[in-house]
Image (tube, rainbow, N blue to C red; front, side, top):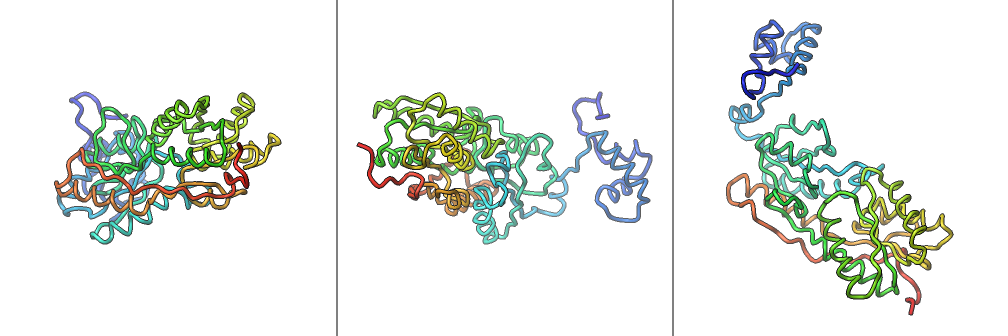
Length: 347
């Protein structure tokens, strides 16, 4: 059972040694997989440590050894959105650019799997982290704050109580140029599909969409789907949207996994993409390029954004960057593809 009683002091290696009836050295060897420890004793010590809620004091270890010279890339985005079956999605593109930038400064980049309840982020020896598009009450941010580690955000934090250096991915501008493209192609009744969380991309897209609806006289139709549902969630969401709003002639599905699902839902309803319903998405990644038809998307300049995030984090580690520092990413660019290109725009 976790320790209780004397305040909120976390259990120490000495506590584990006392309960297990062994020396602190034996505990250290057992938990770190070194030394000659009887396998049964090793397993007993691990169980005692787990029961007590013991976690290694990584900050003390860093003080003894100096900096870890490692930073992490973390996100609470589910795999269904951040990577997908190919593991070559949004998250991995950011990771490749961030790793290159970090290495130039003598830092290793630790790629952390999507952070959720019970995450292992607390066990990674790092000096700080980049959190990709944090949600409200973000799990990755909570883990980092618990450890007292600095972080920066790639994407504007949406929590009103969180202040962190961040790279602004220009969520409203991205939505504006996608919707402008749809209007140029003749859309008169475009709908918006976004994630059901509160990440900046969804919040900003909704704001831009509602503003443009008022400007152009569009009837707002906004649907949400859980990110963890991936393509199937996008399929169900779009199918329901078309049933409720059969006149919809364009869908801006911000999450690329949702957009792929939306294309299937449109075709299964007997409609054609793009002749009856156009589809666009935010991220110009593997899903957008390999969908049939290929999806119109946006070049977010993630290589530049990831490099800027690394620079912000290293600046924060050195004390040169304050918590209100913001870097704005370059102008996003629409990459038109067959999912939204009509030979003759509707009158």
